[in-house]
Image (cartoon, rainbow, N blue to C red):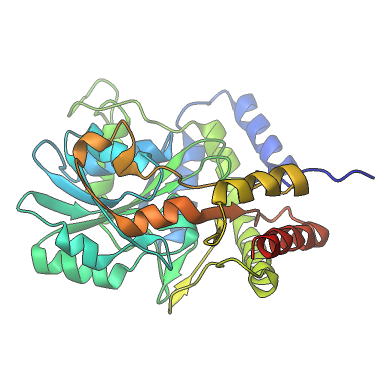
Length: 367
């Protein structure tokens, strides 16, 4: 019997989600309504210590609206990692502010506090770490830097639902935190994002901005956007909330198996006090050509994998103009060596064994 490809990611959508969508369609209230309000409340209690949350139509919208609500705009600088998806830098640029790219810590793939402090100028207003791959950034050190320089913290928690640091959940450290609900994330609403807010007034500004600047119809208070979440998406998200904790435990168990059995490559590390939720299980291939290694995993062993992110943000055509001549050596090292292996909760025991066998054989062949 021929083997099937092990997918790098697999959204898990069950009967409960389909039934919830059908119920919304039967109700006739499809746009932002009671499902969105319930999802915001339930997400808040589940993930961010009951901070007020605002649902939006994508993670990128969440970052953009959070920055606007915080007053970020032309003339301001926000320090972000270059080793992340472009949405982080894009959201800053879309406000008219300047994204300033800092280097990362190679062990955890998150912002290096030393590089952040070296990047501060008189125009710096905020630091926006990314809890990349599901591992929390060094929030204690970053907050100390922010306090010394009179800056604020924002959080890109797109990949980190349920991650914690010293018992405190990501998304509850900064003035706002953003979670993505894209299909490949640890939980999904089909598409969408959630913004956790430091207080009610901040949440009110995000709500105004997502809905054309109004809370009451035709009573527009400011210039806003249309970034609302639908009740269809919220209904999916509410069902996913009931399942995400079990999925996270499975991801962590799968990661433990991979770490205990993979040889010949560098497996992910977890910082002291951190809870990693393994949106991605990211290894580093340092003694072979990474792209060839990934190609052979897919083609010869039928093990799906991803390279996140092969081109750092400061070298993308779209964002390079913000960082002329910038050198980020640790970011470059990560970008040329990372491969993310399947870790999702749909993996079987035989899938995990195949992944280990494939990596070990390829690593051994290149030794």
